[in-house]
Length: 249
Image 1 (spheres, rainbow, N blue to C red):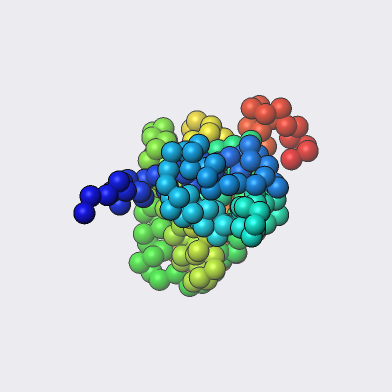
Image 2 (spheres, helix red, strand yellow; image 1 turned 90 degrees about the horizontal axis):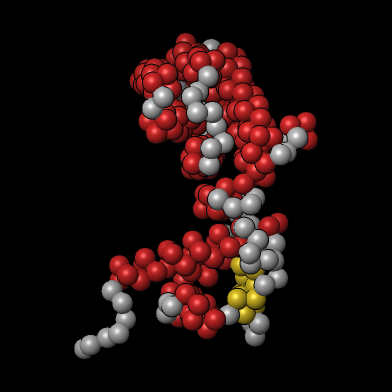
């Protein structure tokens, strides 16, 4: 039987684009808290079907960005209701005017978590895991020294993901997507140095070597230093790009 419905792949693409558009608008403040979203309006504005709109709103609701109110419509929620750990929420906030607030909050989270993850990794990593981490740190060093920043980003994400995994703590491990989003965001929006400083490269090697030796204190200390450098670089870039005083960050 003939049908006017688009193919499944098209539906999926329309749904993804609508989620992205609405998510960016909410996280960027264009759709302010308290705004009522009506399905018919969204259908007309975005030229999509009712089912696409409903599915997109369902996804946004699961992130805490909106909620459905009977006989009212779909209400845009305040930031206090958002699932700020959702990788897409992090990505959208990094892409909008809330970039600096998002970057600061997740860097502070990393500062609290990753040094302890490195300490635990020194106690719990299997020999092969530790050996591969040392190799990865060497590849990261080479990419940074050569200025191959796309490779550096990929390797940096993998390095921090592996440290979190090697900690043996499943809650730490599940933060890898959030860490990946903020590292990718720093890269995409020019919020990191054009060439990694040699000290930062050395500290990554120190973390890996300490984990391999089973030296939890040194692994923790080196990761703290990485996070301190990250926060310092971020403060400087905020001041240069946004006029945010470094002392007030």
